[in-house]
Length: 250
Image 1 (cartoon, one colour):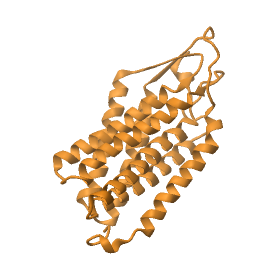
Image 2 (cartoon, helix red, strand yellow):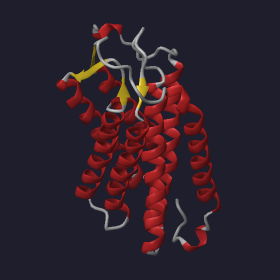
Image 3 (cartoon, one colour):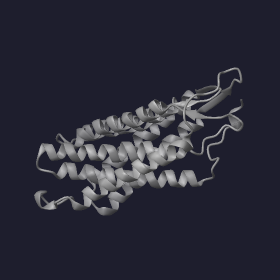
Image 4 (cartoon, one colour):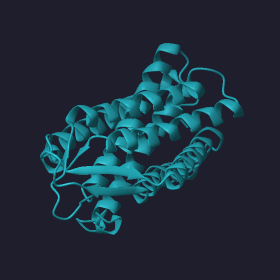
């Protein structure tokens, strides 16, 4: 089947807007957790806030954004299902890789080199999560990719993620934090749709009917779980005691 027959906005541009907004919200929460981790005096609390930041950025800003954006993916006349284990694995990959990147600038002394490595890891987390998530797609046919656009999607993710980390770590003004969240949202959504532009679909009616779950069957549990995660992270940020942190979160 021709690539042009695919639809990335089958539900309208609302999926793009919602995906970007969710990505920005997750990024802002995660970057706030990241700043908090750097300000904490003890290693245990640094580790805790770093983990919270990884969940917010990896789980909400990256994975949930991808899930929302994929609600607009459609190949007319071809039923599409998803492997639940691989879909879940993509979330784990995003959280783990982002957590590793964050730890380089929250648990040890900050340097420009570590910032670059952390941004690279976070960007790779965005990209790897995307392609693991795409491997969960099941339909009568195969997916292939334009390698040039795949490479570009990795570059977009790494550059924008590094820029977002720089704004958070180097510039402490509130406006810079907001800019960091907006940039991180661009990193995630930009990488996603660049990666989707690389997709090529080939259908084959001889292939057995796909096994798995439709994206819309996953909407309710995914959104309920994500809402609980966001609410819990916001509650912890707003109720955390700043008295033990020199200068607060600032």
